[in-house]
Length: 341
Ligand SMILES: Cc1ncc(C[n+]2csc(CCOP(=O)(O)OP(=O)(O)O)c2C)c(N)n1
Ligand SMILES: [Mg+2]
Image (tube, rainbow, N blue to C red; front, side, top):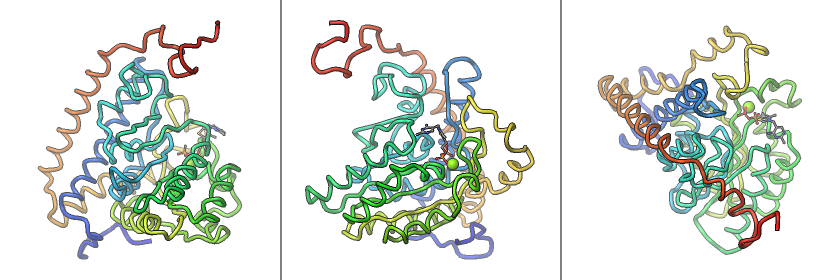
């Protein structure tokens, strides 16, 4: 794993322009702001549920930069707020989902934080762990079957999800057919209250790639540039007929699993504080300042702008109506059929 500390060294930017590096910074700041807003709205009693993704910012913003808009497909999981924003969902679209308003892409009927967008190539998914991985494999198989070159599927999940049978079956199938797919595992060391050592006997998930006969790699998910480089190389291999890759990005879940979880029942404040020292957001701010890509003034202005956009998106979405009760069965049954008929 490369070092995130770049002090005194030239920045290995892996071909990323200054504009792209600033875009990564903005995605990370937006993710954190929207994350916090979800928790605040929940505590204000305005939304029933929110999921945090603090600690995953660098991993998701770096991976989003490697995603090719307009041709790649993203099969994400519920903690992928930064990936959703990074591939082009607006804060307003995120807020429509969190508030479950009728104007939301899913009509306000999905679980909060379960965004989808046909425009952005973001597949709809469920909260059932690993259920979306066979869907991702199916999408990759369709690309191959139709001979659609230069397209790939980026699928993500958490460390705990790799214990599911569907995960293994999907990896096996993807490997056999050399599908254009990247399986990106966001290893945050926890599956709600289950730590890694209660989840698997071999804690290096990337090593399972050898068992499938595909390339595997672990990387530092607190470093967005390293993440970009690794995910980009794997996506490029997938797009050009080189088959699937298993990637494992190391990060940490700084917040509780969700607004319904109290993490102090299974870990201590001290342990979390120790991991917070690696917080990828201030670290990346320092990297950009150190290498003259942004100044502290630029970053503060960016934070203000992100807050303004988040506030506007919140107010706009909150003012909109819920789906109408009469719409309850729309899209559930074929045609105009209703279950009481
Ligand atoms: C099939 C299934 N089993 C259990 C759950 C309950 N559950 C929801 S999230 C979660 C933990 C998942 O952990 P991980 O895959 O590491 O992702 P993280 O939440 O850490 O990002 C569990 C057990 C579920 N949603 N689906
Ligand atoms: Mg986890």
